[in-house]
Image (cartoon, rainbow over the protein chains, first blue to last red):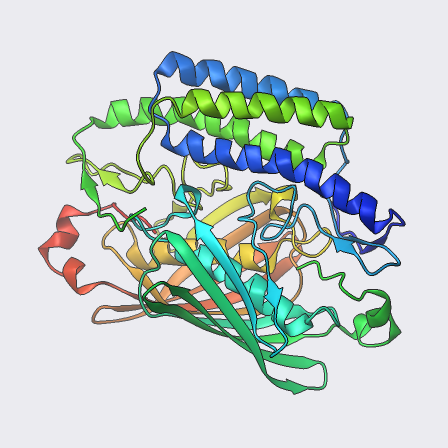
Length: 221
Length: 221
C-alpha cells in the first residue's frame, strides 16, 4: 500500500453520516467478534466451524473493495472522515473507537472502556495501548480541528498499571511557538492518573499556509 | 474486568501449542474480516446481511466463554501464553500479531506488515501504532525472557511518517542499574529509520526476587 494524500470527496455530509452509521454497525459487530474470539471456550469443532463461516463472510465483503487503506477524506462542508483510522476509524474494529471531545475551555478529553482485546499484563491495559490512545488524543489536541499536525516527540511516564475497564484521557495545549505545539495529557482510571504524557507536535510546512484552511478538520492522525 | 495475576496452568506445552494453532486460525480469519470491513465497497444490503451473520457467529462463540480477559498463563516447562495480548496475542485479531525474535548478539527485532487497520494519516502507519509496537518490543527487550519488567518512561522521536507495508523494529539494552533497564529501539521502513525510541523499564519489586525465577518467560506486557 502506498503513501496517499487527503482526498477531496464531494459526498454531502448527510450521506457521509448515513453511510458511516451503516458501516459502524458492521464494525461494531466485528469488534464484538474479536472479543469473543479471545474469550470463547466452545468446543474445538465449533471453533473450526465458525472460522470457516468467518472466511466465507470475508469473501463476500471482498467481492468489491478498495485497493488499499481507507485514507482520509473531506468535503467542502468541512466534514472529514478517516474510517480506517486505528484509533477513531468508524469502520475499523481494531479501533476502540475513541470519541474525542473538545470543550470550550481548551480541554480535550475522551472516555473509553477497554476490554479483553487491549490487555497487556494480566487484567491491565497494554502500556502500548495507552501510548496509542494518548498519541491520538494529543494529536487532536494539538490540531484542534484548525490545522494538520504530526507527532514530533512523545514522552510517556507510567505511574502505575491501568486496569482494563473505564479509562479517561485528557489533553491540553500548554505552549505554542511557530509551527510547534506542546501538549500535556493524562490517562486515568477511576482512582486517578496512571500515565502522564508530554508531546511536541509539528504543523507540516505544506499545511502551514492556506492549505491548512482547505484541510480544516481533515485530521488523519 | 478486574486486575488479574499471572496464572500457573499445568497444560503441557504440546497441548498449549496445539490449542494455540487452532485458535490462531480463527483469529487470522477474524483479522482478515477486520480488513475487509474497512475496505469493502459491496452493496448496502450485503453489508447489513453480513453484519447479521457476524452477530450470529459471535453468539455461537459466546455460548461458553471466559468471564474476563485472557490474562497470562505459564506452565512448569517454561512455556507462557498471553493469547489476548494487544500486540502478540495469538487469539487477538487486534494484534498484528508481532513475532519478537531475540538473537544471540542481544539485538531484539520484529518484522511486521501493517495494513489498512493500522492507518493514521493517509497511507501512513498511525503514530500511536508505532508507539504501541515499540513499547511491546522494548518491554520484551528489557525483560529478555529472564525477568518481568514494566514500562517506566518511554520517549519517541518521529523523524518522518512510516508508510503502511513492511516495517522492521529493533531494540537493544543499552544500560542496566539495579531494577532499571534502559532500552533503545527504532522503527524502520525499507528506506531507513522513521521513529527512534528510548525507554526506561523497571523490574517490579515483587519480581526482583525468586518470584522472577518462577515467572521465567511469563512476560505479559
